[in-house]
Length: 370
Image 1 (cartoon, rainbow, N blue to C red):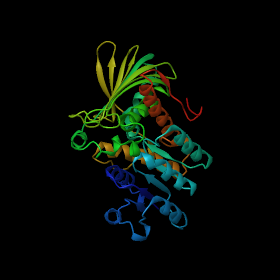
Image 2 (image 1 turned 180 degrees about the horizontal axis):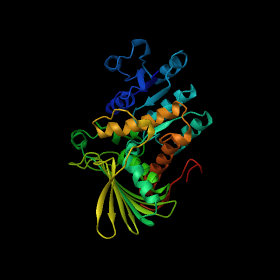
Image 3 (image 1 turned 30 degrees about the horizontal axis):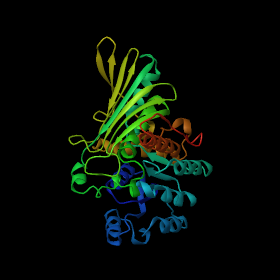
Image 4 (image 1 turned 90 degrees about the vertical axis):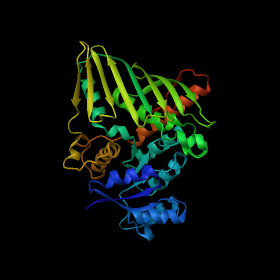
């Protein structure tokens, strides 16, 4: 029997989550709050065949009502703007629902730590949807490095460039919620795109220790950063850098990372998400296919859109956890603890910029912050 899920949110990213979660037939959308506008809420519900009695005006009402149903959802997806993530997640977790939340998990590290602690204390499987961690090449790159063939790494560089929102910002800087503090929080591009790079860096090289960030709040008088340059060190002593551009016209989801090592380098790009590019010290280069990402993907149809496919792979791993598969036998997915680590990174970047671009330690859920 398919898993049932509910969803809070109604934007483009919500549609991606729904497609990714339902493509394999292992889950079905049963309830939702898609907009506070009644007409839009009903229209989206009709689009996905969600019955009127399970279409709610707000997430608080939905959490209470769905908790009482015999056919209550097996998990809830939260895809609202950042500022409401904390309240929505906590409302459903308090009713015993596992939650999938889009990144960043919250708009502040204290709140993110609270959600991670709540998930742990209630024994709820909760996922933060870091899209690109669903790409097989990322895990394969880490495995290649761990093999020792390339020696010790000495630098990690990452970038995420996109520019599709430039026209909107130039038309009206208040029309794009990602640059509005009331909806996005303290960070713009660092929170939206940089959180992805932090998750990739942590996957490849372990937790980040310190950052030095320069944020640019241009063009057209936007309130939050659209561009950022971040230097970082990891807890293991590796140096690295990030280049982040939210309004870089001509780029769209251009995500890349390179790990420079003693005997060559390893690189991954979202343009080829299922492979790793290997550059040997003697000048040879080769592309290595990542292979099957995990047993949960066996016989699962893959979406032609690689962005949706990354989400789908995360969901298949998440479904295995909900189905009770042994932890040592199921694919990995990013938890709320991972999401909290990402929010600590965002806060550290903003702190660094506001304190004159100095080095700032990155806190973690384990130590309660910086």
